[in-house]
Length: 313
Image (tube, rainbow, N blue to C red):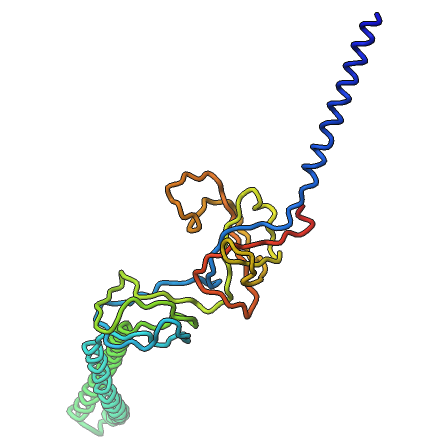
């Protein structure tokens, strides 16, 4: 009996000791507080960078801006040989210049014919009344009627001629618009306000729509597009403060705020250098809009440090 009691006491004591050993471990794990999350990113315009390409094939005859220049929307970056396109524009414009006077002449002829027709109609009515009163002959009445019918037919023909001339004018106007559109395609212009980042061709180069000739950055705020590991992704919120630094360095390059946090996890993308490594980890895309006045290089790889809010812990 004494042996049984001793064993029960020993068991309770051992269980109590094990419970006391676990408590400090659990307390230590819960005391870890993450204040910041780091991800790898790259500096880009918020509206991104785009490839520049010509709309048509041709030889470059002039280049008007260099990489680094700031442009306004519509400014010409380069021009292709376009003598043929210019000739087509001139030809279409000349047709218009000839057609407009022809329409005015046809309209004037129609107006005169309508006046003659109206006069002939009034004369026919007068002759009809006289014929009914036996004051004129059948021949007089027939002549008046024939004149009115002839002028009516002439008026209809002139109306058709004016309509045809106006339609021809519309066709020539469409031809001019097409010629001007083809001529404008020989110029590569800035698609919006922004900066020319690179130009890969020179005067005399043969270019085509299939191959980009440079890179253009649309004018917008600078952002660091970074990827946050899935382990810490749920902690990211918009409006959180953040800063960026050079890879492996501690000095702050620029500060900013989280402006976008992706709605889903995806595979690592351009920030994964070793494409041969099989990586199962997922990442969340996060944009950090940099404060105005910060000076960093577009395309620069950086480390993005997001400062977590106390409520996220």
